[in-house]
Length: 98
Length: 372
Image 1 (cartoon, helix red, strand yellow):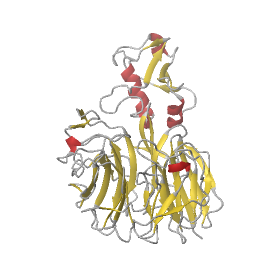
Image 2: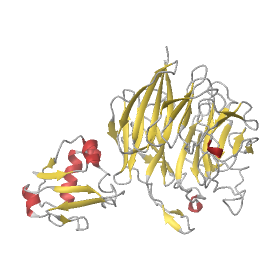
Image 3: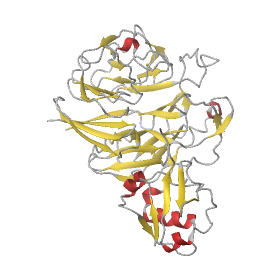
Image 4: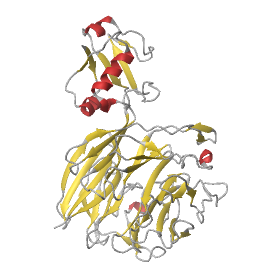
């Protein structure tokens, strides 16, 4: 299972307590994880990436294994620890405010 | 005994506020969708327990919520708003062409007869419709494709379609208002549209003060019994139309300033209207620090200040365009919310006011349902 940590507002929207867990068939990429996440939690469609262009929303970031993967191509394999479930894939709301 | 349900959208969530017809003791629930901007909530006239809410965030975009039990529980429905076909361009603030880009839903207007049919006015300005309770949305592209569309420009708050009025006596007739394009009317259920801005004058905003489009209309209102008579709060000027928006006449009369955002009509007296004068377009607060609602019982021109119960010193809040509403009781209740988080009610048609709740987040919208 892939572990996904959502920001608080999206956990509330998806009614998820703690981490979301999704199953991915085939290569574990950013696109595959988000596809699986949106299939399991349809209310998240459009909140992380645009529903038509599939581009990441500007104020959303993707972190894993202490790296910022936000600008990686969506079909690049995610780090092995994410694929094995040892580490979570983090969806983060960009810092804003004072 | 009737009850009143007030639906309040704020910058940080939605609140549902209820009372019996005395309108003295209020039960406040919320925040629903805490931390999200709630531009608008509205109930279906055909099924008052069916509510819709526009929930949005700069981080996570647009969500639409639906309730089937009067706001006790909610479920997310569809949030895919895609412009139909060729997107085209409008004008940006600097006058350069800019492609239409969906940002958020400003206003939700349920059908008068079908709880599953609802219109959504969005930024960048366009009109969408759902006929399946909000699960899917289709644009009515005739409006955005109007020949004037490529010249529309945003007002300071964005290029928003903020007002939708359904004419109960002419099925298929819809009035909408866009900041800053003006009023448009469709007589064929949203397929084709005509600009309806004759008589509007905007000498400080437009190079041609009488232009057919481009006016910064802040809000329009109608009384259900006389849908051919419309009232408008423009950027500057309070206006009136007696011919279903074919032409407009200024009725600012003796107002201390004719700048403002909301305008509404008494539920039982179609010539009684309410505005909240604001000092100017660059100073969005009441003149002299006095929060005053102005009422005209003559359909405009002659206005009286309503101050009893409202702060008359050091008050510098604003009242936004969708943040005033009336109930259908007798005497008529009038409600408005402020950017300072106060929600006020008058249970005597404006003669006196009292806060329902005083420390909400900035209020964006107020709607009222009168329930049997």
